[in-house]
Length: 78
Image 1 (cartoon, rainbow, N blue to C red):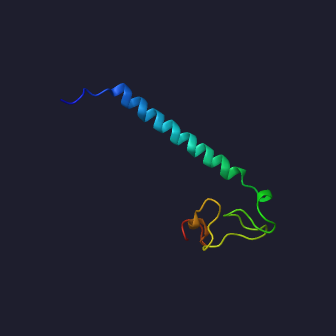
Image 2 (cartoon, rainbow, N blue to C red):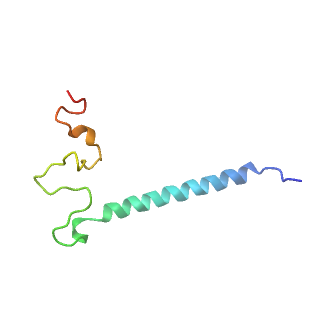
Image 3 (cartoon, helix red, strand yellow):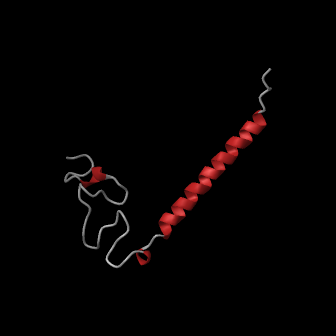
């Protein structure tokens, strides 16, 4: 005979998993933010950053990763 479902326990398990995932995401975000140019060897830039005076090209999307805005006519292409 199967046990009667314990909805409160299942909800608590889901809440713990959700909170743990949120904490991992926050920690990952803080680690990424903590990586500055001071941590890298001289002459290297963090991934996704272009040197001063250089703009992103279609091969290298801007920091947001949106290559659509890099077309000559703008986002609509006109």
